[in-house]
Image 1 (spheres, rainbow, N blue to C red):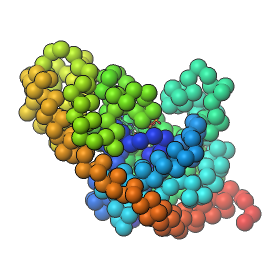
Image 2 (image 1 turned 30 degrees about the vertical axis):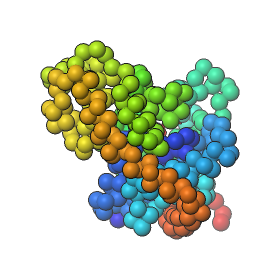
Image 3 (image 1 turned 180 degrees about the vertical axis):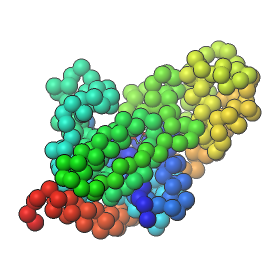
Length: 333
Ligand code: AQP
């Protein structure tokens, strides 16, 4: 069976962006049953920028709880923490020798995160996309569900696979396909419609956290920044209104409909009418997940047991692929 792989960093709490752009797709692909699905907390990626150790441990378990509460089923999918499957890091080293400096320098995430102070950024942050390629290819995964922002990293994954295959004269690593689907592949900040909703935004009001309770969710939506005009009569009218567009996209995604269909229902409405409807929907869909996450977090030992079991299953797939890679490269084992 073909495989799906995707991951999320435990670099903070889960946001609505992670949920709509990634986790909901993970659950859909799991339920479709057409692929073997492997989902990962990428803790080694998280530490490419400083993480306080106790926080990282907490965030990793809480992220696992978020996956489970959202419907990732550890019987149907393999749920792992990256550092517990050492084959990821081992293959990443090989890929560090395949990827070119110029490729990495062109990555917009690197440019944004390293900013003007690239000399002070960690070497790991620069190499991030090579580790990501290893996460995927160590399982020969062919499909990767992600949000829009990860598209460029997946192109690099394809380039690394192609160059490895070319350099060693083999057809070994698959050329993976990104799966970027749904009404909310890029959820924007609630304070600024031109910025991505992000875990690490200093403003908590900019995002909905998956741990927010009903009150917090409703308040953030009521206070979300918008322009003063009512929603337009047709979708075209949303073009230069990023904040309005974002709320409509969220509404469509949370109600499991296309933007066209969902918009038809709310076209022309004042925000004073639309926002409470959106807030009710968000509370109905998200608050139960927060409740389940906090229940799961009361038994961290059970989460650790699930992850240990997941890593055993993952290693059974990854170890032979890594061994074959080492053979192809000419390493004596
Ligand atoms: N705003 C978003 N809209 C849609 N999808 C999103 N994703 C993240 N933000 C949005 C998707 O979630 C998955 C995991 O992302 P990640 O945690 O590995 O890294 P990120 O994209 O850097 O997420 P953040 O929240 O912005 O974290 P920080 O602030 O630490 O950088 C990916 O599939 C991503 O596309």
